[in-house]
Length: 184
Image 1 (cartoon, rainbow, N blue to C red):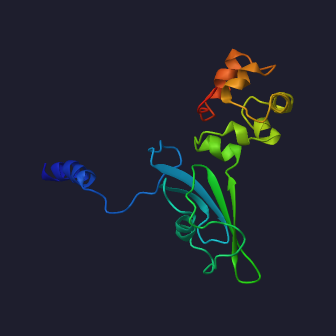
Image 2: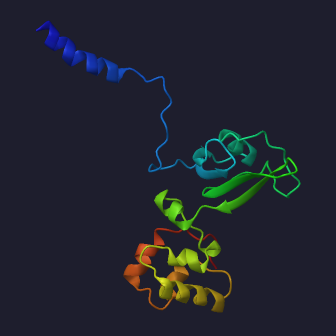
Image 3: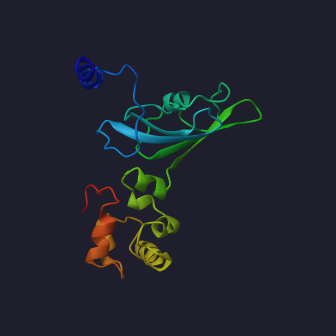
């Protein structure tokens, strides 16, 4: 009977203890408003997607990924003290002159969708629209043409005006985008 009691209570005791290890962040969880996801690739020891505070500087995120060699800030017009935004992608390259170059882009549409990062419709290309679930090359072309005909300012709500996007398709697509501010 004592053995049964020990077998029952030891697991409960262990579960109630706080783990001293820091858990690894999973990709599929809701971010708090002060956290962002940033992808780091290139000549770093730990490429990947990092969850960092919203006011994190580019140089800090690069250091988290541990550059392969100590990097020298280059004159290639990259602001290492720049604050990052959700869904940005940093690629570190070591140049032959000993400096390092950082290329800053957005994560791909597919990565953003998987990580539940809202897309910025004003930055999307024809290929980006074509990679959205349920949008093929013809509909992507229509969206791109609509945007060109109606000026470069394109809002999520404008999708409903594109030929071939009905109410059901609009509702499916709407959830992938960040809402447009100050729509007039």
